[in-house]
Image (tube, rainbow, N blue to C red):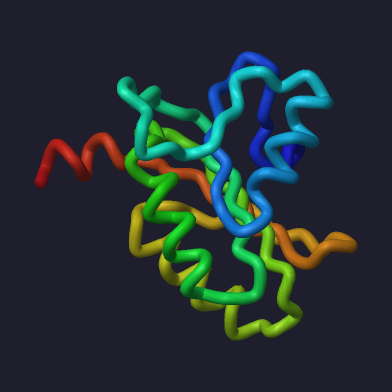
Length: 131
């Protein structure tokens, strides 16, 4: 997920989903200090360059995590989604939903935990201004 999103130690990232606390802890151990979890108690909402979502094996879990992450992402943000299910229909649903939100799928990579989709939001600033 780090390689696909080009996440650096200087980037601000938001993590959501069923396994988000484990991913958060792993990134902190690797030295990523500007990562966080969505919190309803956050007073100031920072704009994040990267969103990392662990979707598990359910589209509903993905939708819930995406709803937490989307308001915190910048206009040119990158999102990586870890899908632990081998069901191809789930990956297609997630891909379609990301494309509806203005993300363009850049890569899809199989790993030992499942499938990771990477998408970048491009031209979202122009869309927001036009609306």
